[in-house]
Image (cartoon, rainbow, N blue to C red; front, side, top):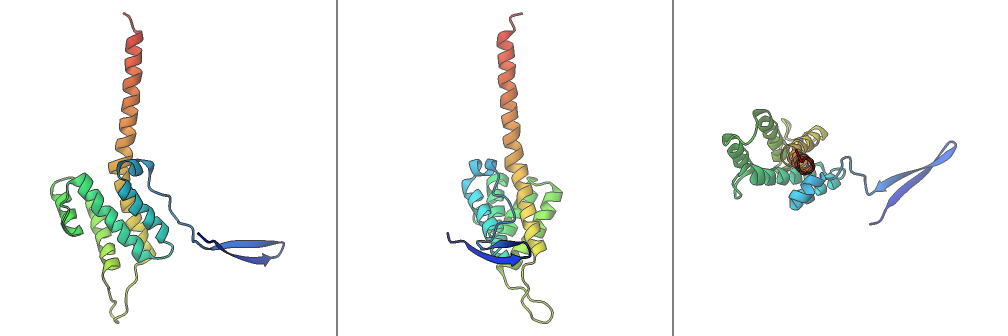
Length: 173
């Protein structure tokens, strides 16, 4: 991939700024997500990579992530709109109320990215930085809830079970 830098002189020393590619503002998907759901991790990482270039594209990719999480972890219907998938997850009690409300707000931002929205004067509304940030926060919260925490708990549980087994084997009384 080509790298484009801009170099200019500042009193005392030259300054180099990378103009292309822009650096992502977030980290890649957690390892636990990469292991458990590689396609989900790919969509998330693409959202991270394109966010500096296109807020709309990032939010749309995060919408794919949300849909996949709801299908995989909340048994939401595969052929269904994001709204139906969210409703199903809430109705089935698979999401706490606070998370469900956050997801509902996310859905509004995703809809704004997917369909043209207009202000009172007829101007096209763009997806703003706050919407993008909120979308990432929602997905990262779901990553933590459904992938990271369970994987860490399982790892710790296995570690404790192995230590207990070792201790028990050494205890001859």
